[in-house]
Length: 202
Image 1 (cartoon, rainbow, N blue to C red):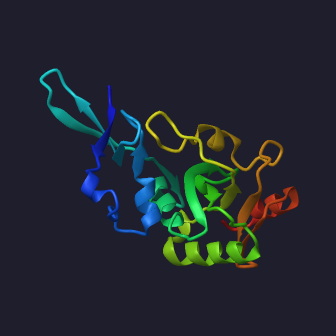
Image 2 (image 1 turned 30 degrees about the vertical axis):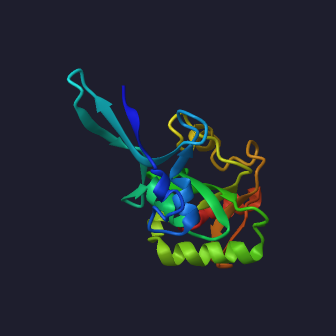
Image 3 (image 1 turned 120 degrees about the horizontal axis):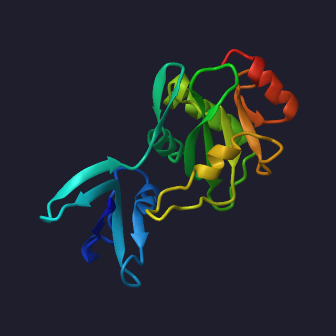
């Protein structure tokens, strides 16, 4: 049975920057109270298997991909890039089907840092950021603002329900936004806007 690779963080490194990114990115890699209260482990995001001879083998990189515009999109890579924005706490990225199109378009469910709102300024900044940092095929077509991320047993963001619900406005009660090239921002998604998006050249 595959297991998640964790490494105990030594006491002398507890206050050190362990990840080459902003300190909050280091925090995302840490799991606390794993075996005893107060312990801290680094989550490498890889699963391994142990055979009967006690040899350890790499099993998989925890993450997935979807295909859009003839290109493979790494959900983890897009989520990591979105997470570098100062107002985004975490992001779950997944593919959603678009009628009349092959593959799946990108969608991101994001949580915000404390005392942050997703106002026009942030929505414009998010648009400019993904336009600069991501190729066109990897830019999320839809954004869903959720109150919190749900974790799996291996401490990864749980995306099953998010994927099933997609951008269905009859089901999703969280705020939804779409990649609005006309206004150079992520704009609120309504049923009228959704029809326009589906008819546009994606």
